Length: 393
Image 1 (cartoon, rainbow, N blue to C red):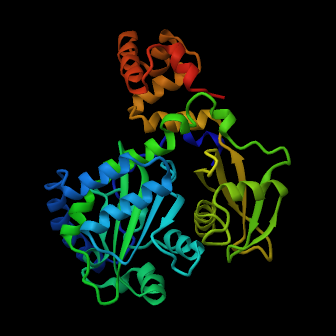
Image 2 (cartoon, one colour):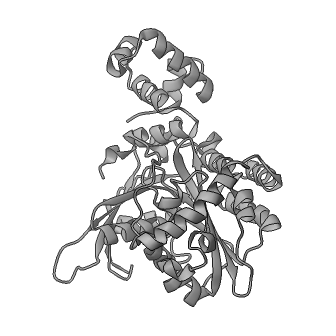
């Protein structure tokens, strides 16, 4: 995708028709028809949601937030292993991941499992549910082996007996995801467990947005262009083979990879592996926005390579995210509606009320009403102050 991808934040829509067999579809629909209606009717904030909200509100960075959320969940819902991830809300791809303990396996296998063939309870599918939660033992009617991810990886490699997943949505955009697992001999997760977790979805999504874009760490504010990665040594390019090993890279790529987390769990950071796995499977361009440890943002883009020896090879480029892209994302994180975002972007481009009215087919009075709401959400009092804080390239 091109650099203008952030001109529209993808918002989950209705789930597409199932790609699984008719027999499985009936079992799945039957389980979720009862379970999800029960969930929707009991979405009030419960004890677990309160604890998650309190813990998340004190966190200043992603590792602290992930650890606090997992620790709070463990007090109510026991699990053997957990993984917390941030998502690029435009593409749904994982951009960063946290583990509650080492697994002895690299993230490349997990990325391949998530972004390979269509599977039951993928994060992409769960993100379209309301509430966006899934229990594998329930959603397969006890036939967990019908899930490729469970059959090929979770059970044989780790001995997990069940999986509970959730995607953290806010105002129609997916900002993060969680997966927790029970071990061999443990009881399966229940609908009550899912109900408890579902009540915290908006809280965690909001906390992720605050950590990424709040206060001094906000790359959508003044100085955003300075917080993007600038490397005078040339473009950052990687060639990755079918086994996720780097076969070639440019000098500039090393510093970018290290800023994204280096090689903590795998040959490459999770954000790169997710984009590469999606590209490899779909044989088309994929991309994600990833924030590095420095607070700088990168566009991670991948494309499949052709050639006799290049089956499964992909080329990955790491480019500084522009102020325009980050401003759009930061506006979304501050709770602007889609129409308010349209108005705000035009203001940042210097458009007058009359020009905005004409471009969006709104009355000048309606534009002014939108501006009042925008100023309140952004904590500014005028167009000039808004433009000073949010910079568009």
